[in-house]
Image 1 (cartoon, rainbow, N blue to C red):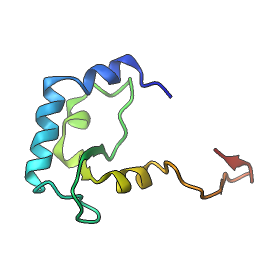
Image 2: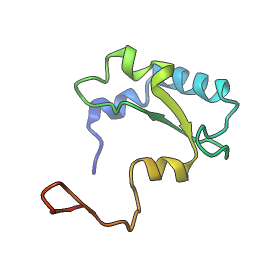
Image 3: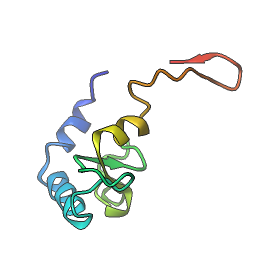
Image 4: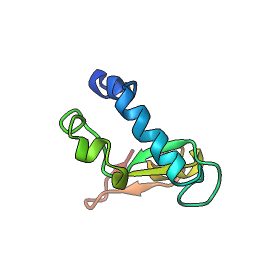
Length: 93
């Protein structure tokens, strides 16, 4: 799925790069879940086109978490072979 342009632009901004670098330095470059080398700074509360310019969410260090690729993929349930169902019993893709 293609990222909306406003989010794409945010992740290219100097403000994001500074917040990302600060998080990496603060946690000594290690994944905050497993201790491996961290490479992806994750927003705990997900960004959207409606909240991306709210610095208290998008740039707040308390809302950021440094993760290794594996932990980040697990967080977003990427590449999972796990089958999930919603409350009505429908398959969740």
